[in-house]
Length: 225
Image 1 (cartoon, rainbow, N blue to C red):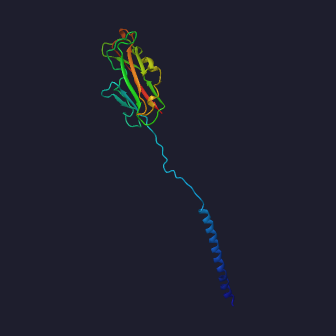
Image 2: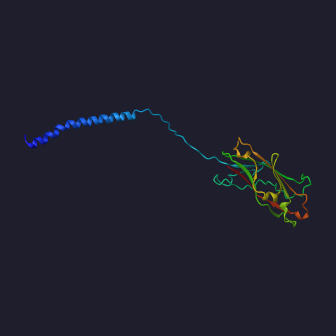
Image 3: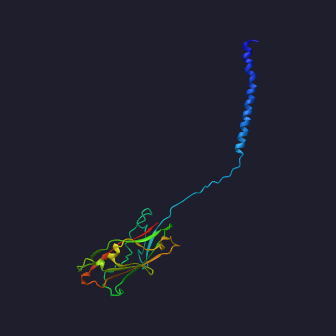
């Protein structure tokens, strides 16, 4: 046999051995994979996981009723603003004919009753009143020459029987924020309303120089989370 024939025959003898070795490797790999995928398993897929923000909406109601007797914090725009200006509920009564009260403060009293509540869905942590500056202006003509009418305008603020403030409008302006109470922090309808009563008088010490004068004072009510 020539050298060429031996060279051709020799690789053919090794081919069965290669095939057998390949099959053996495949069997070993198959057994290994079978053991891997046959293990016990248990799983839970939490498919619903959500969270959302609530709303705080402050509503004020004038118990005297009539047009414009309800104001909401959203009246000024969207919930993104959630701050409105209410010019239809006058806490000081709007009288232009008041005279000095008696020593007991029971005559010539301007009374306004209102309520507040949270009509949103979230619970607030505080409900406060922040008075603004009291300003004096003429009330028609003629006018007195006094310049401190706000110091002669007595203001009483109560929530039910609880006194929130008593003093002059000038003192109210300088006292800063006042904690009104927690009732309005809870959303309606389950949350109770906060009843507020204003009683305003001209002090009995006011003389003729206080005639024909008017006072104005903004009041800011705030729910906070």
